[in-house]
Amino acid sequence: MDNAIRCTICTWRGTESEAHGVNVQPAPLPPELEEIQRAYQEKQLEEEQLGGHHRLPTCPQCGRVTVAVHLHRSHAAL
Ligand SMILES: [Zn+2]
Image 1 (cartoon, rainbow, N blue to C red):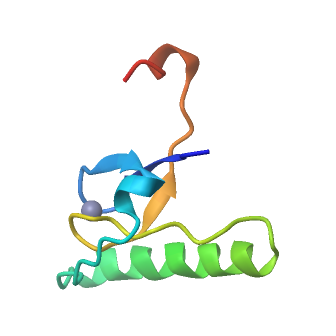
Image 2: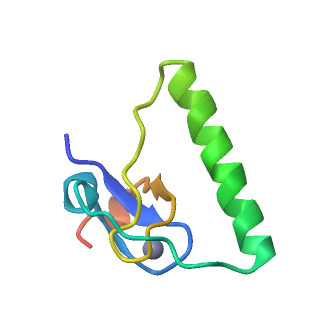
C-alpha cells in the first residue's frame, strides 16, 4: 500500500513511493525547528525498534522528516 505522507517542515505532501529514492541534502534550520526534527526522528526510531512501523522516506523537497497523513473521509478526494 502506498501511504500518504507529508513533510513536517515544508508544504510537500505525496506518497511514500514518490519520496523513495530521492536524496535531498537537508538545509540548515533554526534551532527550534531542528529540535522538532530531532523529536520526530527519535519517535520514529522508537516505533521502528518496537517493530510497529517501517522508516518513512524523507521529504523529496527539503530532505526533512515526513509523517503519515491520516486521511479523513471528507478529504479523501484530495
Ligand atoms: Zn519538506
